[in-house]
Image (cartoon, rainbow, N blue to C red; front, side):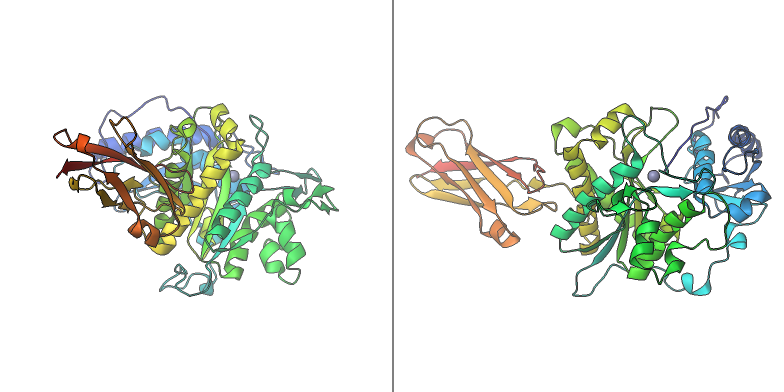
Amino acid sequence: MIFALVTACVSMDVGAATLAEMSPEERTLLVSQMNASVKAVGDKGFFYYEDPLPVTALVSLDIDNNVVVIDLDERIGPRAERSETEDFLDTIRFSILEHYDRIEGMMGIRFLFGGKPSTHWFPEPAQDEPDDDPLVQPTQRATAPVVAISPGHGLYYHHGFKDWRPHRETVNGVLEDDITPVMAGQLASALQRDGVTVHNLRPEGNVLSHRPSGQPWWRLGARYQLEEKLPDHPEIWHAFQGADHALRERDEDLRSRPLYANFLGADAFLHVHTNAHDTSRPRGAQAVIQERAPDRKLAVNILCSMRELIHSKDEFSTYPIPSKPMPLVGRGENKHAKMPSVIVEVGFHTNPEDALLLRNSEFQGLAMRGVAKGYRLFREGKPCEDFSVKPVLQAFGRVGYDVHLPVELTGNPAFPIHVTSRALNCSGRYCHSRSASLFSQADVEKHRVQYLCTRDDVGKPLAEISVEARDADGVVAKPTVYKVACGR
Ligand SMILES: [Zn+2]
């Protein structure tokens, strides 16, 4: 994804309100401020390789639906489905970010092209979006769930420059096109450990040379890999048949991904990207969705699990991860997918701190295991909750006998779980510190923390035992202290 920021010269001095709640004067002011921002973007031009002209953009409000409407030049209509248009719309969107943040409960931005929606320019085939339920529900079958992974971007042939080039540029030592297959490989392994059948559109292990570009296959866009794999299905990798614009193969690359996921009948579709902004300021992860309920649920679980895993390491504990996904209507990779589909923006390669983390294999591993865990919770219908050891009520222990205390855990830890109990405020030879590895929920239920009351404990304050747990992903549970009253 790409962002751009245009600083607005004026800001509204009213509190957040829905469009309907605003006075006509407030709405007029809002529209004129947003128009100034989008005009500044549109006037820059150079959004298309073959068309450097400025683009006009006019803002209006759909008050009933609490939506901002932006009408672009009619000449963009035939290009509404192109990747250059996606980048351009991102730039427009983020130029008015601070204005629409002031609209309470805003339901999004609707883009029109010459006053008409993109469906006017690109009608949806009837079978593409059945009215009743357009989304494949997460599998309930006994067989392994199928997940398609799309590592963002990759080399494509540019018909204007007549060369092979990446979609993005190297910033802070990160080339998004090349780093996404690396992270996606880690995601694939994590999903496979959970019993998922994975289809990776750009497998990082393919080091053979792709003749036309002279580059290893793993660097190539999905379009070329699919052309090789499915020569009889050009409708997947050559969707822009008949197009003659310079970036047509890049557009086909983007489009081939959801079409292939649909072809597979995948249960979920996970895209791995890194983010960009035209300043170095923005940081952190994001999850981008087409606004559909299952997609939102999957994205919320992914963000929550990414936070749990990334923050489990002190070094990464302040990494910004929002709790809510970002709905962007019309992003082709999500829009054309018939299953829950989430674009995971792992971090901003335009921010030096994020860029350093994006290149750190430990960080990559935690982030990707977080994404896999988010999918596991989504599939199992479990909420994302904190991993912790539940405290027990005060127990009684007879001198000379072991007390056996059950351990109850909350959250969704990955097995095996390592549980350690340690007697606090204790000295001498009766100190108890024990560890156990638990490989299943049944092991957790059987496990007991032991404490042996001695004569020395009698008449003293309660004996305290600290109980700690750490799961296979390295997530450490909030520890708790068990208390035992010793007597005869
Ligand atoms: Zn990207």
